[in-house]
Each structure stands twice: as structure tokens, then as C-alpha cells.
Picture 1 (cartoon, helix red, strand yellow):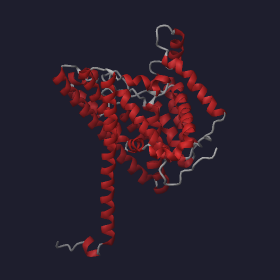
Picture 2 (cartoon, rainbow, N blue to C red):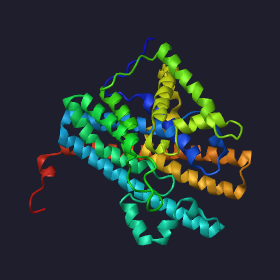
Picture 3 (cartoon, rainbow, N blue to C red):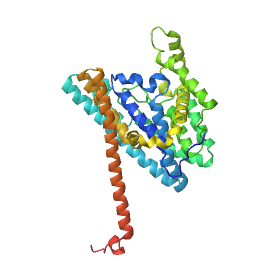
Length: 390
């Protein structure tokens, strides 16, 4: 099959397209009592939009940070990663405070205990310890598990990038070793909604998905040919077999499928990214890319989805808040077909609006930066370095 190559420096629209899809799916999945959840991909297989989001983040990080280590050196790469960690950390803290405030305010207005639904019982009972643990990432309200994991993955990125300069096998070996360690020991970080819990997304397991995307972006791994050959048929067969295990496994009359599903994906399987989840995601990604390849040059026509994918951090945060608010609205209106559709579509519109605002803000900031640089370059020396008396 003839493939359309992406020129160096050119943004791959597939990354933004699939990351945008992940944002819409994450919004649906995080809305409490949302009947549209029954139709998202996670209902039909082991993996979910979480794996897609983390993989795309790793791939994007290769372009945004990994190449900096190669072209500008370790110091420039460390500075770029450190700044991103700073941004994401305060984004997480701000998002947590917004969700806590919304929950407490809505509980006052409606009488519904949204604080309990968000997992705030221990936090409110021990506010001093709760606040300290929130800042230290030892306390994470419900639905806010991904960004702390992303922070750990970003902190690991410089070591992976520097090891990759010696040999691609070194970061790949470390990636596999960390994942295997989790599977054998169950090692995780303390966190969650109360003492004694651990992080829902174990970063030492989920780094396998992130750095798989990173490895493809850095060229450490070579992507297979996107064609409908034996690999495509094998992946498709795996996806088809996983449907009954995941979709009907927990019905009362299908105990055998439930037993098989429980053996493949135990209760902590999502947390520790067990092998079936990882393989299911890789198979899903390959099948999706093969199916999309003939239409690759037309993906930009899905402009709203691409736009949302381009502003992933802003739209992820907005999606969590909008999903929480959407659940509150449905609590008041009821979860009929029409209210549910209106709330979901309204959330989609909200994501697109936030993405447009974020792009406009970034565009304005970049434009101002460019104009300042041009002014400094073209200005007389006396204007750039004013007289000491001024």
C-alpha cells in the first residue's frame, strides 16, 4: 500500500485527530450515569480512551521534548520538560480545586452529596492533611488520576531521552523492566481518596504505553506497514474475540466469559496495565490506522475533532469539569433520551469552544512574542539599550 509521508516538521493530523477523539470519549466516560457510556469503545474491548490518550501524549512528547534533547542538548531538553511539568502540576491542582468547589456548592444547592461521589470524605474530615496530600499528589479526587500519572511520566522522560542517545535498546529495556516489575511486585505509589489507597493509574506500568508512543516518535521503533495483510487480520481477530469477553462477561448467565475476563483482566488490571490491555490497545491502534490510512489526507476536514486534539490539556481539563456538571444537570432533569443527548452534545460544543479559545490565546501570545522579537531585532541599539540615566 502506498503511504503518504509526513514531511519533517509537519504536524501529523492523525495525532490530533485521534487525540481529539479521545477527549470526546473521556468526556462521555466521566459523566456520571451517562447512558452514552454503553457505546464507547471500552465497552467492547479491554482497553479504553485512557490508553489512547497516554499513547498520543507519548508520541506528542517525542516531537515536543525528545527532539529537543537531540537537537539542542540535555540542558535545553531539561528546561523544556521542567516547564511542562510546572504547567501540568498547577493545571492539576487548579482542576482539583475547581471540582471540589463545584461539588460543595452543588451539594448546598441540591442536597445531593456530590462531595462523597467525588471521594472527598477523608479530605473534608481531615482538611489540613487533605490539602497537604493534594499538593503532594497523595490525594486525588475521583476522575482526576491521569494528570498526576502524566507528571511522573514527564519526570522520567529526560532519563529515557538521554539513554536513547546511547542506544535505543536502553530506554526500551528500562520500559519493559519497569512494567515487568509492577506485574511481579504490584509496586505503586500511595494515593487515591484516602490513606491506604494507591494511584489508580500506576505510572510505572502505564509508562509502557507512554514510552511506546515516545519510541515511535523518536524513531526507536519502526511502525509496521499499514496494509490489510496478516498482521491486520490477526489484530482484527483479537479485537473480535475480546468483544464477548468484555461486553457480556458480567451478565448473570455468562459465567464462563466472566471467569475468562477475570483471569485476563483482574480487578487491579487497569491500574497495573496487564498484558491483555496493552496488547488490545496496540491491536486497536493498528487496525484503526490501517482503516484510516486511505483517508489520511482528508482527516483535516474533521476540523472540530482535530482542533480539540491540538489543545489536549485545555480540553481534557474542560471535559472533566463539563462531564461533572453534565451529571449534575441530568440529576435534575432526569436521564431520558432527549436530556442525555442534549447534555452530551452541549458538552461536545463546550470542548470545541474551549479548544478554539485556547488556540486563539496561544496564537495571540505567539504573535506578540514574534512581534517583540522582531521589534528588538530591528530597533536601533539606543532603543534596545537605553541610556543609563533613563
